[in-house]
Length: 221
Image (cartoon, rainbow, N blue to C red):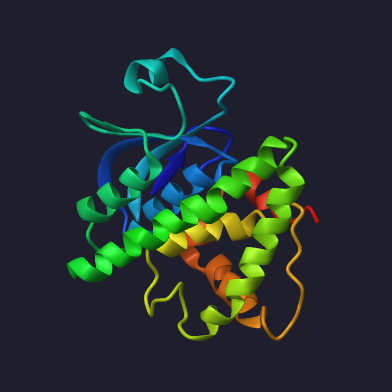
């Protein structure tokens, strides 16, 4: 159960576990969103407190030396890097596993997450900053997603038969395409990507992870 201390309370049903966690989350950030997906996938009981970087309480600065979102507090442990949070949650709540068991496969998964960070997450950040490079970043992200479209025809998830942390990183980016003013054309090449997006967005844990502001993103074309 995730209890949202913002404007609403969202049921995260599946296999709720007792927890004293608090997750300080940015309701529109794709980095916060990826962690919320993991929390939902694991069915963790956690208090989600929606904030913005412009209204951070003093408590955050006391917990997090960078005074940033997201910040995850689990008893005496404080984490403030999203990918570290995801791996911690996967180890703390091992079912269902979101990283492969074997070291080689785990290494490959981590490398893919790193590539998503370098190749796409930075482009999302550039577009959202609305700086001078936003249009170029938008074009690069659109072309990159179209180019990899066919790989989603090989396996149901991102190069995997199982839902993993890689999908937790991809889903928030794909959900934000309308907000980023990126349109993926309906072609034979992009059909597998479109199907992948549909399956991610219909997933129970994904729906449970959404903030109210994120739900509104798909309504804006």
